[in-house]
Image 1 (tube, rainbow, N blue to C red):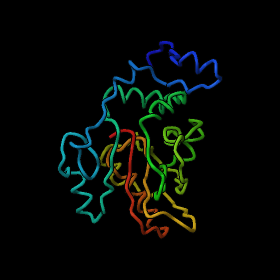
Image 2 (image 1 turned 180 degrees about the horizontal axis):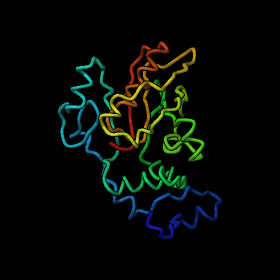
Image 3 (image 1 turned 30 degrees about the vertical axis):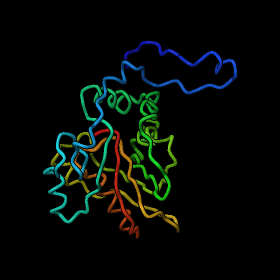
Image 4 (image 1 turned 135 degrees about the horizontal axis):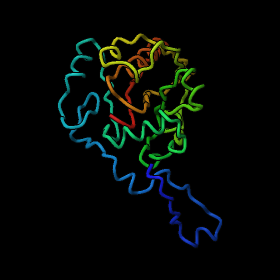
Length: 216
């Protein structure tokens, strides 16, 4: 992001042995700009930082009869993170897909890691699925498909996002784990993730559904 050359600090012995490690996508200086969310001080429903009590958004979801996703995110949506998302998704810079791979770690035992998919049109224009890129180092279960929508979520107002129609369909295997973890890049209103959960329920899934995202 800073356009400075990355240094390869691997020990000489490792290089001579033929063993190599992946170069990071971002330098330490760029990584230091991003702010981790303190999980002890985050909303128990959506992971919004700054309050450990249920936020108004989650109170509204609960009032609508939703079982909360107990969402957690790794990073706050600060100016540096907005710049990262613009370069990664907006400009299609796939080189950044592994920038947070060392941080985005989740166990897959007794749970399925299900990414939120891109719309076919977005995938065709961008050339990659940004959520699959971010979480591609994990064993993913591709159980959701997404139909085309008239207006991308990023171009909608908050009110428009909340009334977005369902566009997900779930396809489950014969044997499913007791928990599904939905994965996304950014949690804003929660509408996308709650639609994804509804699609899983419509397909017959009866286990626990929670969610995680890079950013909140």
